Image: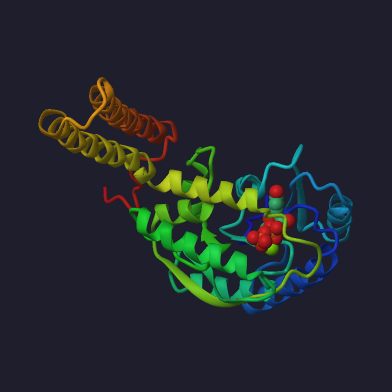
Length: 316
Ligand code: UDP
Ligand code: MG
């Protein structure tokens, strides 16, 4: 079995329009890299994960594999989503370094040699930072910007902004990533969690070469929810704060109602007691919901079974 120096992982969902050009450009990049970094041609592989495409994608990928066996095809049984497809590809990849790239050519393959070159300076993760986003709606740009700012505030460790999944990872990072079995995956956040020397490299994000984005609003919201709940328990704590707030206000209001009842006699019989009970009980219920949320959050963290710590080196 030959040793693979570099694996390129490509999630593919209905990308028939992009695959021919993608294959040509990736092949050129492989060519350039083997001369520039003196890598064996057979030491490079492209792991294409077909994520339940309903168009010609799979047959195009299989044809590419016939033409150049360095292109491997992993075919999923149905559409599992971008992050799951990526995980499948990363698990299959054998390379000493693993690059993750989209098939739609928004991430130019010509950036890969730069990522690789940077990693040789001693970085385990080289992520591509979008200097400019072309051909994307202002809605996507604004929501992405707000989302990454929020995530930065909530996460206990920094997650780089303007960064997608386009990145290079070393084998030791990939091996840790493979040990993180969580179901709701936000891979760029998980890679930040892993640590080791990481660095960003600027690139220009291109417009899609063909087709439409398959990240619908619903999928984007789901990814955002996964990101926030995986990296912060703050939303759970919000309930607790809210409970204290409402209960506190109810308590204060009770004084006002008592005052009106005893000194101004402006209240209807039965109304005061009812209001006080409703307000304070409502608040108390929220407090307990929040408390349950706190416990649930911890169970949630446990069930993710993340490694407790990661050993970088051991001295005997
Ligand atoms: N993709 C996938 N499964 C999905 C959705 C997307 O494998 O359910 C792939 C898609 O083929 C592309 C990458 O993930 O290579 C990014 O998807 P897309 O371009 O639609 O997202 P955007 O770039 O708009 O965020
Ligand atoms: Mg895209």
